[in-house]
Length: 318
Image 1: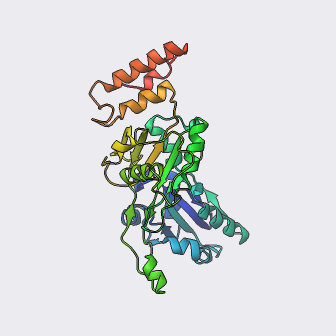
Image 2: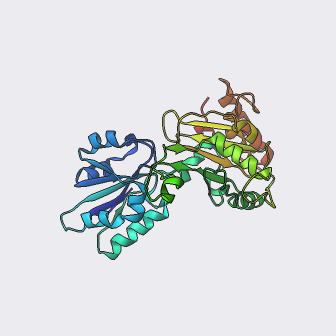
Image 3: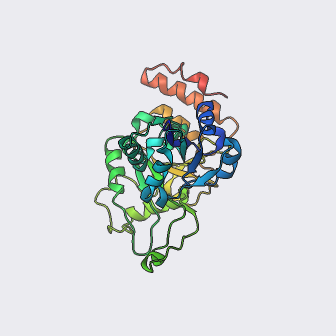
């Protein structure tokens, strides 16, 4: 979360109001106005009740094209404005720009950080320090199928690193047809799913992307085992591990989704954890005694590598 003392410019939540700590909650209630970026499933109605303040919806175009209006509200010495979005404040370059504009206008800024998929992805068992550059996947259209991001996945794999794929979010996006006519008409909200992302990766490997094929696939293909995540941090979060071809048919429920393309070689501890999330019928299944098998694999793996995993065992409960 971010605060600007007079203008609390960026105050962030994870995926719902229950993830706010006491510090930003108390600070938010002191503000005169609140803004929320609607890039995520709607939670602002509950936030109005929680903050005891009205919440104004700040669409993408407002944040990117009319940010000065928010800063104008925060300019008076007695003003307090909060800007809320999901994740960590500096997870988006737009927010760095907002901070810079505030500083240039001598508007005090305080930052309160929060969890983000950039670090919460470790819930799947893959070690954070083994992640390379993250990539963004966007919805394809009939005439636009960008695949340049795939080169980063290949480079990460060559370096023995995992790749976090951030999946497209379309909220209050004007249609191309309406923009051509000079009158904005917004499309229904869309959130890319794990299945759609997996299918897109396979299409790129098969040469169906906009580039007509990639020179280096990084060893990625339909049988490459990847990790799908949904609603990370929620009580109903879902994590699945399986081949791309199986993930392309997997339903992991409501948004928000992410996909991870792991390195070709996994540490034995990583392998043990992701195996726990194996898709049923797609390389394994989750059974009541799965956790015990995870612990056994940790012990066996440590013994083979000459290491000691006794410190890891308390966190793996049967």
